[in-house]
Length: 381
Ligand code: GLA
Image (cartoon, rainbow, N blue to C red; front, side):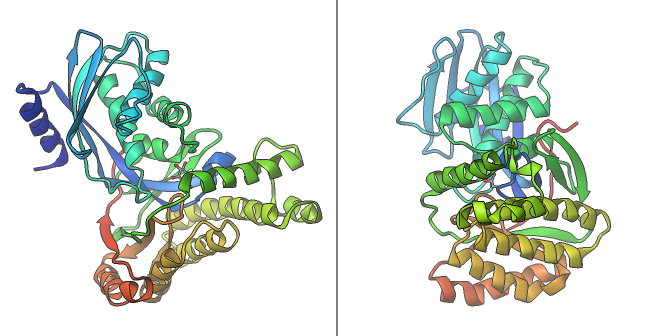
């Protein structure tokens, strides 16, 4: 049974009546371009074949009743007239937040009964929360026939995170969950909110490896990185680090702190690598992709300092297997979570074997491996 069928079945069991519709939105993996989105820069993620499904029916009492199968089978209910933050069931704030933002744009939105289930590993950096938000928005847009497009949906999802849930994330995760394209990664311009498909070569898949490092300090360190980037932009009197070249940065090195300099060097060089990666994918140039992904990892490790020794070990283990036949790097926000490899099918098993043979010995942890394909986003026509 696929995820949408499971959601529909949970709805029937929970509410003793069939649902009207089932909607779905994918999680994502970022191929290259991390910590660039909130600097108005470029990212190159893909939507993946793991996501969140919601079975739903309209209701006419202005209430939202939601059953979350994977959050201890909890149920939360609230009124659209007064949407409050829920201290007890944190997961329900994703529903509350997205609907609160949606309501501002479309006051006509009404109530619903929902059953939610998902298979994006939580807390692994594969955007289970963005996939939840985009699935909610797709559900309400479908139930109430709202003229909501994918870019607007992504912005509402991000606003829900920033203003309601209290996470200061950028736009990447919501945008790719909404607008991803099958068999493609996507170059997103996080300032212009425009995108371009980047073909994944035939016979390649994503090998996503969860380091299973317990992610700590994610929010505080993430916010600190943002502040450091914003401080450098302010120093130059520009809106964001997107507006600076490496030459400009170097010319001011003496007037910046050593840490600020390295943080900005990561962002500026990562934007260049991400644009170069689009061209490499279009040209089917895997050797260049391999170099760009490794340079990205090292920049996130040394200049941005968001990797962990366990993630570095995984990248080393995988790089030894794939060489120039594919690429590997950490992916997402960092401080634990996943690394990704873009790998030809014949190397998937050798990668898994190398991880089993070496990772536990080096880190004391056991990794989870997900072999993924690039899929369509929830709002992509
Ligand atoms: C998290 C955030 C994204 C992005 C990445 C780092 O996933 O949600 O907006 O900033 O970290 O690239």
